Length: 333
Image 1 (cartoon, rainbow, N blue to C red):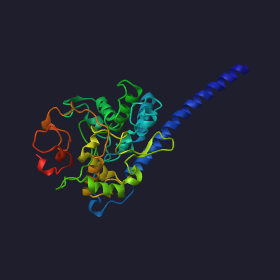
Image 2: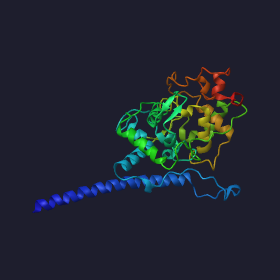
Image 3: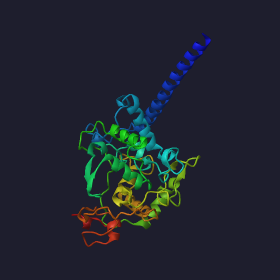
Image 4: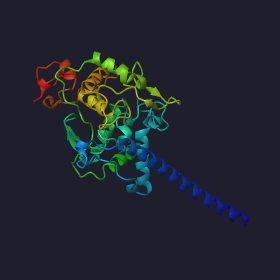
C-alpha cells in the first residue's frame, strides 16, 4: 500500500514539474516579448503633425497566438536561439560550435521584432523567392543558412535539425499575420538618402569615438557578458565579427541600421545621428579588417548588382572604391 502511494506521489511530482517547466518557458518568452514591445513602441505622444494620422507599423503577433504543444515549444526555442545564439551555437555553444560568437539579434534587433531594426516581419510572407545574389529561387532555410555563413561567419545547422526547425518556426510565427508577398510598414531597414559626396571613414572614426566606442570598444571588439559566452555588445570588426559577404557590409544597409537604431536604445522615431554621420560611421566600420568569404558565386548577373556592392566586376565604369563609399547618386539608373 505504501509503495503504491509513493509511486503515485512520484507521478504527481513528475507531472507537476513538467507543467512548471513549460510555464517557466512561456513566462520567460512573454516577459521578453513584453519588454520588446515596450522598447519598440514606447508610450510617447506623436508630434502634432502626425497626430490622428499616424502610420500603422508592424507589430509582432500576440502571445495568445502561440500554438500549443510541440510547435509552440519549437517557436519558443527558436526565439531563444535568435536571442542567445552564442550560448547554444557559438564557440562555447552547448549544442553545436558553428558560429563566431555573435547572436542573431545583434543584427536583427529585439529578436527580429523591432521596426526598421532589420526585423523578420516580411520574411515568411516573401519566401520562397528569387534572389539575384544567388541567381536562384531561395527557400527560408537558405535565407537562414546565409545568415549563419555570412553574418555569423560560420556554418549553418543541418536543414532538418531541431535548431533549424525552431528558428524557421519562430520566423514563420512572427510573420503569420502578414499577407503573402507583402512587406508591412517597418519591415527590414529604412535607408537614409544618398549623400552628394562619398561616405568618409575619417569623419566616421570621429563619430565612432563619440557615439559607439563606449559600448563596442576602441578596437571594435565588443563586450562579452561575465561568463565570456555571449556578447552584450557585439564586435563590429575583427575575427569575431560578420564577414564581408554579410548584408551589413553594404554601406546603405549599415547606414540605415545605425541611423534608426543607434546609439543603442533609439528607434526610428527618435534618431540621434544625422544622415551624414550614419553614412560616415558605416564607411569607417566597414573599412576595418574582418573575415573574408569567397563570393565568386554571388551576383553572376552583374547587371543586377546593387550599386553599393563593393566587389567587381561591374556593368559600369565606376571604380570599386566608388561602389563601396560613393558618391552613389551618379550611379543611380
